[in-house]
Image (tube, rainbow, N blue to C red):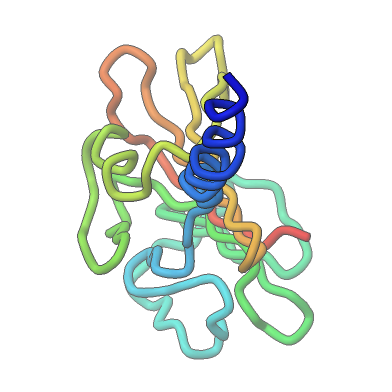
Length: 157
């Protein structure tokens, strides 16, 4: 019996700890919206192809388009992107995604939380957090069809 306990302690516990060490970690630095990433300068973004919108509330350092909303810090660095999947090309590791939440989960892994985004509209969200790079990605999708609706990328503390 003593040998089993020693074996378990010396061999299996380190293996289990190593296997679980990567759990919950995801790299969100390779997500782009029409080729634009968090941390890019808004001054380098060609906004001419997008439709300016006045239907969203005005906020400091936020540009509202029908296709998306972009928020910057005081130095014009993009800190938040709120993009519509039907209008904006969303890519993860250069692979474009337009359809189903299942495709995003395959690309980014199971290290996310799922909850209601808007129960009344039957919209759920899969939230990924990249702790190393301080990025949060929220993928909003239809609860019935699993169709992607929009993505919210933001720099978090």
